[in-house]
Image (tube, rainbow, N blue to C red; front, side, top):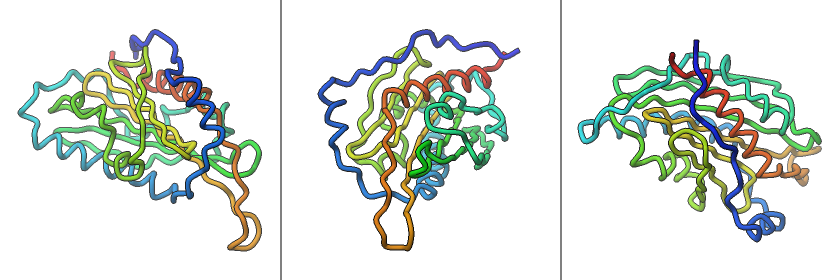
Length: 233
C-alpha cells in the first residue's frame, strides 16, 4: 500500500499585497507557442539530468522514496486544477525514460477555459535522481525556465516536500510549481493561450487570467495527491 507523504501544512501566499494588486494592471506578454514550451519542459529535463550525472561523484546518492510509472496520466488526475480551470478534454503521457542516473515520466492535460475565450495545458513531470542530489540546483529552476522566462521569480511554498517553490513572471498568468523530496523532483506547469476569432489577422479574444492564489492552491493540492500516489511502501 502506498502511504501518504509527510506534507502537513497548507499553502499561503507569501507575496506582498501590493504585488498582488500590480498583477491586475500588468500587460499580458505576447503569446508563446504553448506546444513548444510543453515539449521543452520534457526535453530540457533530460539535458539537465545528464549534466547532474556527469558530476554524480561529487555528492552522495540521494534517498529516492518514489517510483515512476510510464503512464503518469493514470496517476495525475489533477481534480483540483480541473475544478479551477475547467474540465480536461485531452490527456497525453508525453514521455518516460529510465537511465542509470534518472527515472522520469511526464503527462500533459489540456482543456478549454470556462468562458470559452481560450484554452490551457497542465504538464506534470516526475524526475527521480538516483546518482546525485538535486538540491544544489533546485532553486535555480529548470533549463526551460531560464530559457523562456528570464524574469521568473520563485517563492517558497511551506509544508510540501523538503522544499517547494512556485514561480511567476511579469505579464504572464502561467504558473510553475516545483517540489523536491529527497532525490525526487516534481514539476507542474500551467500554461494559458488565447483563441483567435474569425479570420487570421483579426484581434485575439483575451482569456480571463486565473486567480494566481487559487491556481497555486489547486496545484499544491494535486501535487500532494500525485506524490502520495507514487510514494513507495
